[in-house]
Amino acid sequence: MFTFLLWCFLFFVCWPLALAALFLYPLVWLLLLPFRIVGIGVHAALQLLRALILLPARLLAAPFRL
Image 1 (cartoon, one colour):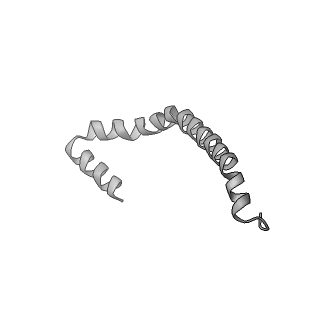
Image 2: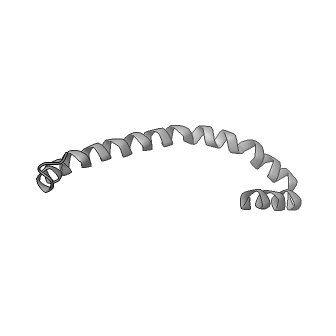
Image 3: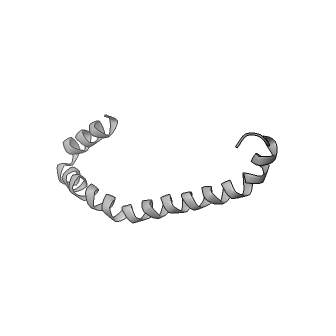
């Protein structure tokens, strides 16, 4: 809601800039999408590494529970 009100204010103050922002936002989102995908992959790899490192401690903490 705040973003919409900010855009309305920008439209009132400088409508060409507001329209440019409205049309360029999806393009910027598409350009940044590969970086998000890489970030998800790196996060998953680090979580897997963390799980492998902490596995012996989890097994020793509860020997009868997996």
